[in-house]
Amino acid sequence: MIDYLKIPEERLELLKKKREWIDQLEKLGGVKVSLNEEVCIEGDDPLKVLRVKEVLRAFGRGFSFDDALLLLDEDYYLLIIDVKSFAGKSRSRLATLKGRVIGTGGKTKRRIEECTNTRLAIYGKTVSIVGKWEDVEKARKAVEMLLQGRMHSTVYRYLEKVASS
Image (cartoon, rainbow, N blue to C red; front, side):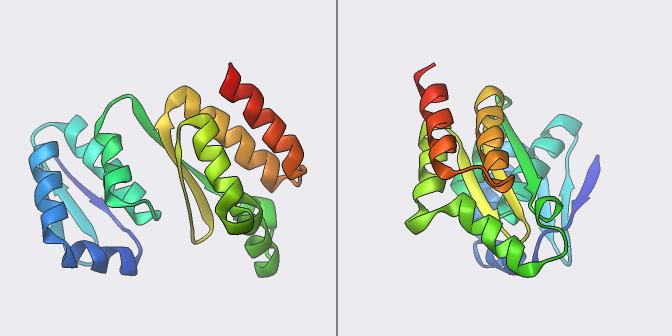
């Protein structure tokens, strides 16, 4: 099976510079990866090809390579939230919403990650979450609460509640 994936140019350039990452991914995933204008993934097992595609999609959405590698484990899941759908056409609103998710000095992002045992990446017009399914759902709810305009204190209370359950 052969599958293709388009990732942002700057992330693709980073992959091209770090050939050892691709070698590691090929070894762990049991596939062949080639980088041109887009990423080509070749393998005999369609499930492995899809897993490696998710790893590369996560990397393209701004995750570190190590965080993206978590997706090789079948218990882990990638969720991408389109911030544009909350911001409309306004660029300044998009920046404001991304800032709400990040918080002052990254405090809100860190709190969501710690309370839900997930990893977040805010990149371009998206907020992406990697983690186990139940944890991703908790983080998704917290992020969407922020994007809908709920107060940070309300979201923090929600996070404390899910962290203790």
